[in-house]
Length: 259
Ligand SMILES: [Zn+2]
Image (tube, rainbow, N blue to C red):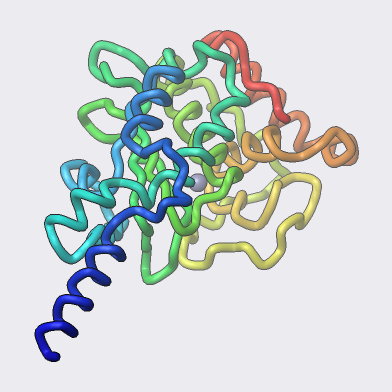
């Protein structure tokens, strides 16, 4: 009897370890290869991200399964939906857009690192961009559990900003002129600043007031996600958006069109 129970249990565990039959045929590896080819980018998932430095951010990578067998069966499947979201988001960008990141010192192009979660001071983040690394590589880290379309555009906005200043270091020297007189960025990352989403005409949200980089990244995400009616009532923000696009054009050529 005990042996029978053990056998049943073993069969049950094996069934649990196998992919459900309702799972679509597409697998994460195939989709990853297709996206790398389609957009000229590099994508790393889960364990593969451990090789890259993540600075002061804590990246969480969940073990895929308890056993080597389960890891073999599951692979990177937990990233499948996330890869689909990435594809959906990147489809708004012109075909050659990401080739601007493919330079001699950054051969693989813009690198997207997909991890299960990202923490900073115990706060869970959608993503971050590490562009200032001495090796010249621009990396976008995204959290599988937290990153939404807006966060992906936001991090691409940071990467664009970095790429623009890489070519034209003084591109945004006059940026502060577009802010209210006497305004000073808070420099405070401790709060997420999500409480007040649309504080005034000068900034997209509270988070934009941290520094000029967050200001521009939130403007870019707003360009990709807000409609004309939203922009029409914000002339000061439009001036900032126009300056960002003006500086982006000579570097990137065609710019993405919001959906
Ligand atoms: Zn940011």
